Amino acid sequence: MRKKLVRLLLLAIHACDGMPMPEAALISAVQNLARPEQPTQSDILEALKEAEEQQYASGVSDSFLQERTWTLTALGIHQARKVK
Image (cartoon, rainbow, N blue to C red; front, side, top):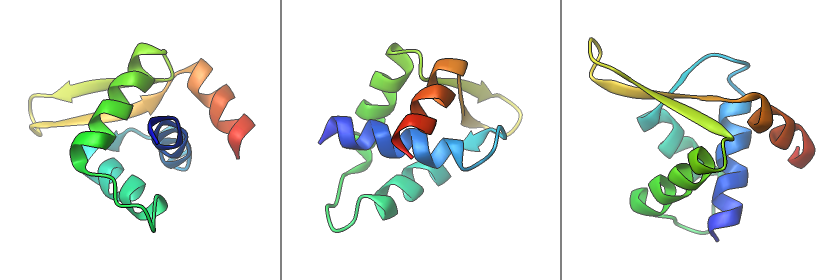
């Protein structure tokens, strides 16, 4: 299921067209895309960690807004286009 979640993460972030996506919104989007399966927040965060380790996505913490946002790397954009 983790591979599917990584794929859904890439698609959700790619839909933002280069704009950073807040982590809470990303988790909600993936939970909706994964239906009827019901991945937990923990499942999605593990998949997000894997996407970051594979250099598909990059997360940045914003100390002003107190949130983490995510964007795709060049490799992540390439992967997202392949799975679309």
